[in-house]
Length: 94
Image (cartoon, rainbow, N blue to C red; front, side, top):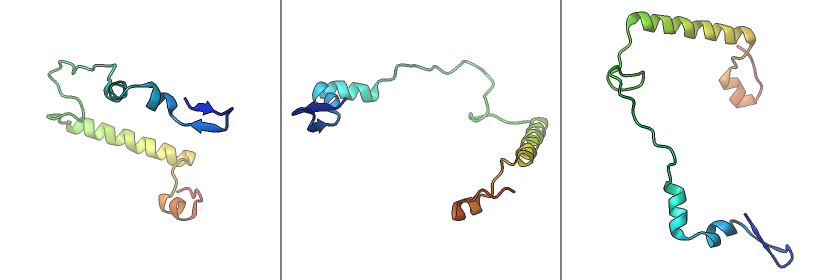
């Protein structure tokens, strides 16, 4: 919170942070982790973890889902040509 002095003429930003807390309190605020997450004990690795392999059937199914989702986005007009958008700013649909 800012601190106002001299009837509001002088405003000191982050007064509470610098003058209200000690260096130790500020350090604790920076490193405090209120939630501890433990890794689940599961023998099968999940996608993205080391040792995970996908079967051909899973890959084919995921590809079909991805293809259907992209077609749906094109049908709705949600796909935008990125090069045109970045150069001119207009949302030219593909």
